[in-house]
Length: 436
Image 1 (cartoon, one colour):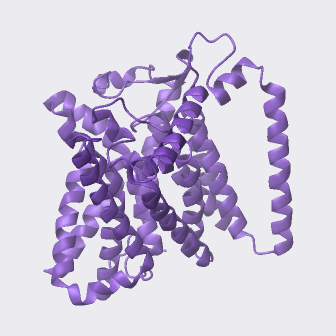
Image 2 (cartoon, one colour):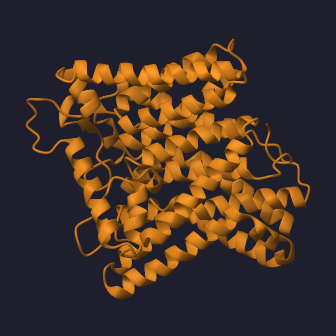
Image 3 (cartoon, one colour):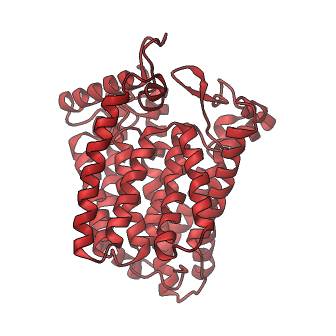
């Protein structure tokens, strides 16, 4: 029974990884046919719910052995953070700062990726304990869906009309069928099968980083150059600036960790400094160019839009900082981020995932979350000779960068893929499960 349930959780976990890049388009399409958008958009949470029930059962049945997992500092930190979220959800609701709907939705989006991490971690642990031998190529599970996303993105760029997604039910009641830079139809931001242009841009960091590490191992595989080029074209037309920054950090970190020679490391460090200087000079030189203004600043001199994208980001960031300073104990889960849309007061969007945590769970929650991220980075770096660890170290830096500028972990595609891959990489024994 335990063996069957362990395999079931494995297949559900893998199904979730394959499904989430297409969740937005499939859920909206299904709701346009059957209605009930709220129910259809929670499909991945239904899968996670089944996994959680199985995981709890397996933990109870095998408690004597699985309690060893709690000797792991990372598991202790994650469980402590999840417990804190539950406490703060009750505090926020009981104090009246957060209503029930916002509180419940806040619990959902704040905990789902960490619960998924724990369940994948548990599944791999049980696979090795039971000596099950299902070899799975994780890179294929990520890359095949990514190629479909990229192909559809290229069609949006070169073939399809900009409002094509309206045929699938995209609208002001679900997700708008297209986005623009500065309300300018000359700069259409594509979203492929994801929830928006920013999720698409950040998602592309995963396949590009996978392909880059393949190139480092085999520079003569020219197919990878074509795939990277196609990915970069789609990334460009998402006009997602935080994704570009995140990708730079990911690629730089992976390349740096791959350098064996200390002298070459010094050369690389010097190149990074030179690139930063040249980039700064380029910003200064082209700051008055209309095309450059739209691509980099998402505005232009003669724009009729009263508030620019950067002004909105800066205002939200300052507001978030003030909120954390004035309420260091937090306001309750659901007070900030996407969940706050359902609250009594106007939505509180700080455009920074770390500040969002601070606004909800206070300094204690923020410090706990930062501790989780630091420990993850430490373990990945410690095992940097492993390609999976190099890859995930780069991706973790990328996600930190993006989360400083946008609430990336509130997106179901990004959070499930990122923490699913982390669970696989950080599992001490994955040889029976993962095809290296």
